[in-house]
Image 1 (cartoon, helix red, strand yellow):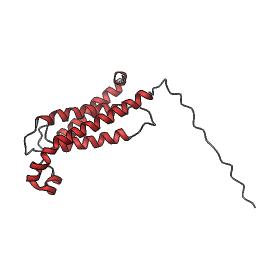
Image 2 (cartoon, rainbow, N blue to C red):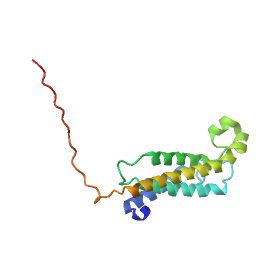
Image 3 (cartoon, helix red, strand yellow):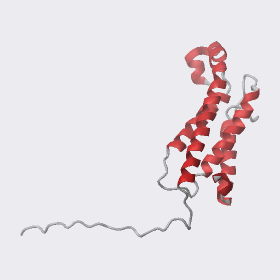
Image 4 (cartoon, rainbow, N blue to C red):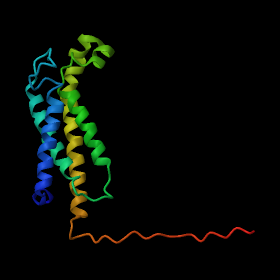
Length: 166
């Protein structure tokens, strides 16, 4: 399995990325108590599970880009970013989301947006899981390491330019 072959640098990056994502999601959604953001509604139980899973999956996904193939697709990375945005929207306070409140009002935020948030959380985790699966599949099919790749010096092609007539 590819995860067993992670090097120390990749594990360190995974841990640091997971902590950064945990803070980036947990502080503005007030899952972590802080003096900057105050949550106006109670935190549902599932928010903590989504928060932890988002941080762990994101950390592993980021670690796969350390010394990974240069030609690998960036689609999993973009999908991971979008999934993290979705997770922030899913675990955030419905009344604290100014865009939602401006669009459908406070009662709409509580009666329409709040019931959709668990679905958004599931979709976000599914997209993040897909991005990680796609990235790990690419690494498994095309492993790159110091000993696996022999770099050749770049070759230059010079085009013969005609001499100007005098």
